[in-house]
Image (cartoon, rainbow over all chains, first blue to last red; front, side):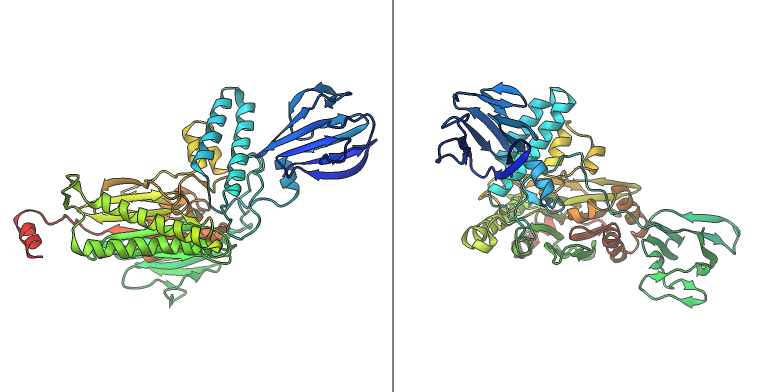
Length: 270
Length: 274
């Protein structure tokens, strides 16, 4: 949820979440944000929040409303905008920024978008795509935010029953895939047969050995190390003279694998 | 027609490394040539309920109907084969069951599920899907995605806003635009493709394709195609080794031989005898 931070002379007075669709600001006590100062009009301004967008409107105040130093009548609030009413300052913190500070939405879990909200968001995104890359990026993030907000609004519960995600963080901040732990590279060397001495690095997640239809085993590269698993054939491969079971068999440095009549040595490269 | 001799099916489902429970649901029946995979969503255990309802309703109903009629029979009303209509009807039925449960019981409010379904008959496969669960095909040396996700990301790719490359790192992979049980009505995407002996079909939830590159999935099917069970387990293991942030489910179907539907005089005699 977006919020306002009220301050005077650099001193933070309070934080106000923009929970309502209409948040009024003024000197009189019925306002949602009351600022008891003679420079502030009775009904000074109002902030209208629709989904993730907030608009500030001056209600014909005597001394006017400034945003980032410029007098405004109506203004589409952006993250970090400073609203000034007399000596008081209100800093606007947008939904995305507010959410990033709070709980980060879980973006792994599948959620559904309402097609209607989708279309509106997509159209808006498309319309703004014409206005250059910057605009496109902005549109995309709004589209996602709106989508997420509407998904939340329409009661799409999320899987862990956490509060529905408030907003989508900027698309640039993609989650980095879990880093693979550093793992020594393995290789195999043929020690019998016509190609004895030939070496092969095991850089791929899996490498098959053997003759299809006769005997095939697969060497898999995993974070824990290398494993050999029997794939097909009547006989299972031997490791150091012992036949392996049906389950994946972990490989150690200098293990000798025997299958389809060929011996290969497995070793780890420095 | 019993397809047990024509299809080999292997499946594996796992909660992954992060989540405590599995909201994916899978079902298969080689005899009727039917495989179904669903990835549920919704708070508490509602996701499991939604995906479980989807697979159960669709498989039990379709199995019963298919025991009586062949999917390639001509529907007298539309003059077309009944397969597509049968599948669509059952998907809609599952949709309304889930939707009604979600409406009537507060703990299930907002639940829904993705769906990918294959019905094999007459040397063809009928594919119905909703959401971001996928069907891939490994044929000869090629490996390609058959279904197109109903997701915000896919729409952005289609409209040219982002490239497929950027999509890999996108933040909102999880937002689907169509799902079962969310709205009172839904229109599944249904297509039909010819199959060939040797084809391997892979149905998977986004827990696999988000965690493992398509190239690695293709390579695994290529390398371990000889042992479908092992291939299924290997795929799940790869997803978990890469982080396993979501539930992972895979169903593999290999076409062992041709399975043309019985036609001509004999078929008519059999139909008449029934």
